[in-house]
Image 1: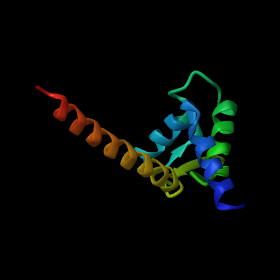
Image 2: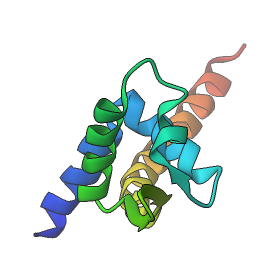
Image 3: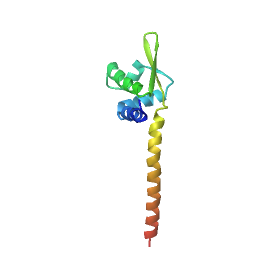
Image 4: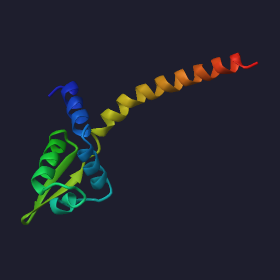
Length: 109
């Protein structure tokens, strides 16, 4: 998989609010079983499992079996791609807002 495809996967994975909430829940805990990840949502385990599978394909989540239970853990490393992408626009907006501030100061009586 190329870097661009990998990045698309991460962006697609975090585009959904349910998946962003799952990432948040996993960030707050070391590891969580599926039944605990399902509790905050108004959907069944199958639907939550499908969201987790998308996160797993993007490399954002790993899982392991503990007896009959599957436990999930966040891997935040792929989110660095998003952070790097946003950093460019942060610089863009900072520079433009500084220019706007200077223009406004010049126009003051």
